[in-house]
Length: 65
Length: 257
Image 1 (cartoon, each protein chain N blue to C red):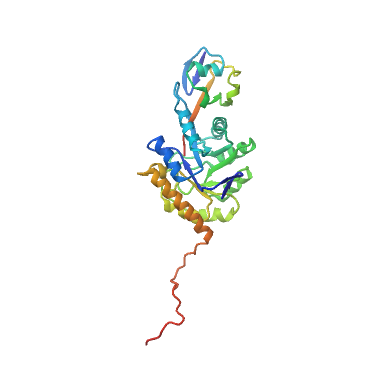
Image 2 (cartoon, rainbow over the protein chains, first blue to last red):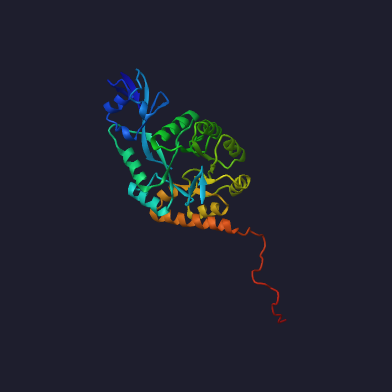
């Protein structure tokens, strides 16, 4: 499946968001995720089924003013 | 004491966490400032990277309240989804709402700001809007559900200090019961003292501390003047006068000629 993750094209075998994070070696604890511009809460990542062409955002805490 | 959305804070200084020479110096500056609230942000995480988690753990060790921001968002949609992701990530419904309207000045897009504030307030967020000193916009933000306003005093990171003191006086006078936090543009402790003497409830700083030669010492300096400025406001400062007024009584003065 071809996805865009944080603006970069990715070919993955994962079919759920939770599996995608694992496949791409993200630590799931300190992340917020969105699929096609909609928040996907951590508890729903396992049931969030991915589709070809999805745009995924994976954000984490950082310094801010 | 300062009350923001029902939370009582002893410190009237809110501090940003960006641009410090190192995470350790940031943490030391936060401690030196005695602030109880820090701003944080969120950005794309790279695969295999753990820096976001490490940063959050460092902040949590400081025992301060987290105020996430939507820095860099230029549209309502972007700001709203960023706020939702921040709530998920940081576990707080507080959000410093930025909707930027201009690349060079980082001036808020006040139209988008009001719209985003309305959406987020309806979703239960406690919105801290980064706004201008415009009174009409302030009214609209309050109508949208905001119970705190954060007017700038100069462009973000400019260190210019209050460029429109009359505007700040006006917003303070028009909204005597709304907590007002000066956010953005403060460069020196004297700037913070000035706005606190005007009666602002608190200040939010980042660059002025983080980019000082000694951020820890500067954090402590700001903490001192914020408290002094507040005490001066409560003490009722004298208004400037055009002409001299003798401080020593003239009654009873000896006459020699």
